[in-house]
Structure formats: structure tokens, C-alpha cells
Image (cartoon, rainbow, N blue to C red; front, top):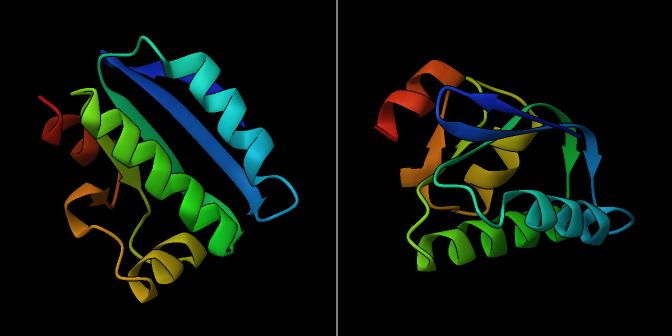
Length: 108
């Protein structure tokens, strides 16, 4: 997990597996880092596995950020594990996007 800026948004880049073994730790680290962010991009393009705990984590993050008026996008690429899992779970399509440039443009 890495944190950086992409334009005026806080960028969280996740890689590898997001599952029951690490989702709570990932969630705590993200919340600690982005609690004051005005816009948030979460890049999942290099996530190789996402289980139901990871989906719940992303749902909670997007929900909490939305409730606080913080625009958020999940970058899931054209295909891949994260996109497939989130689509199978009928995740909110309005927060999914294919690439960082498109995600940043949607948050303007």
C-alpha cells in the first residue's frame, strides 16, 4: 500500500491480496491517512485477489467518505480481479472507473 497525490486528490494504491487476513489493517491505515482529504482515489488495478472482507472494506470506505462529502473513485482497470469481484457483488458502478486520469476528471 502506498499513498501519494494525484492532482488535488489523495491517491491510495493497493497491490496484492485484500482479504480477511489484512483488510482491517489496510482499512485502519487508509482511514488514518485520508481523514482530511478533499478527494480520494483508490487504485486497485494491481490487486490480484479481493474477497468479501475486502469488498466490505471498500464499501465502508466509500460509504463513510460519501457521508462526509468526500468524492471518491475506485480505479479498477478494464479487467482484473478487483473489477470482476466488485461487479459480481453488484458494487456501486458510479464509483468505479478504469484509469487514474478518468477518475481524476470525474472528481473535478
